Length: 142
Image (cartoon, rainbow, N blue to C red; front, side, top):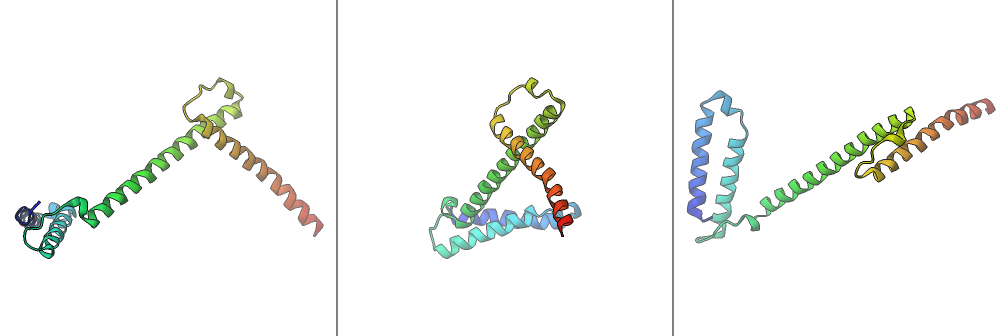
């Protein structure tokens, strides 16, 4: 994108910002000012680069940082979705175990991880059961 195209986009963003400022429902929208600020930033980059410079988003550190942040956020969201899936399935299997019908459950993809979670919960539950007896014993001895 050359300086002329960037200048035209900047002018259009300014026009849109002026129009939006006249309407109360559009004035609260933050996308217009953000777009205007981004075009102004790009225009500054091209001005600093000198005549004949062309904007390349692949070489723009701000764009690359935003893309990296978006990718990291998507990865975190995928991890959270997987954790929720495992927890939900573990809860389901725990209920079936408590009802004595676990052997009737249809296997699902990824149940190995879910079984590990159910086992971890069982150990934690067993540890909590033992803890009060130990603390009561220590109180009696004091």
